[in-house]
Length: 117
Image 1 (cartoon, rainbow, N blue to C red):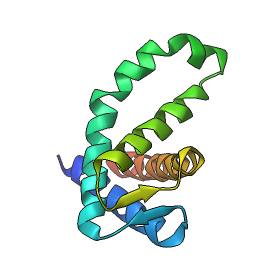
Image 2 (image 1 turned 45 degrees about the vertical axis):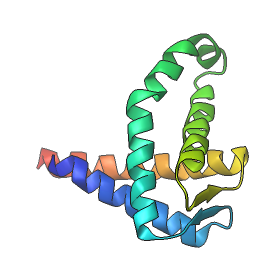
Image 3 (image 1 turned 120 degrees about the vertical axis):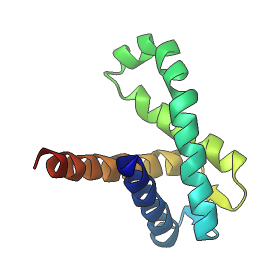
């Protein structure tokens, strides 16, 4: 539970920073960023596994790069569902997804090192 809360707060900070630093991502308030993180998390838990399974052949053919497209689609769906959050289009969602993924990889690495101590 503690790890989940830390990850949610970290993602909240990443979304807020992206909204401030990237011209193609707009986040109105920190409450909007929190809703974005929650909605994106719910979509990644519920819809993303289904899409991943359905697109196994194209994912294998593209050596896994199609998963980036699925991430971008999850972000675009979040853009559609959350008022006050705007991503400039597919390519912007792809870049935003890469930033979120890289930040989460770093956070997972830190949490893993902390847990092994």
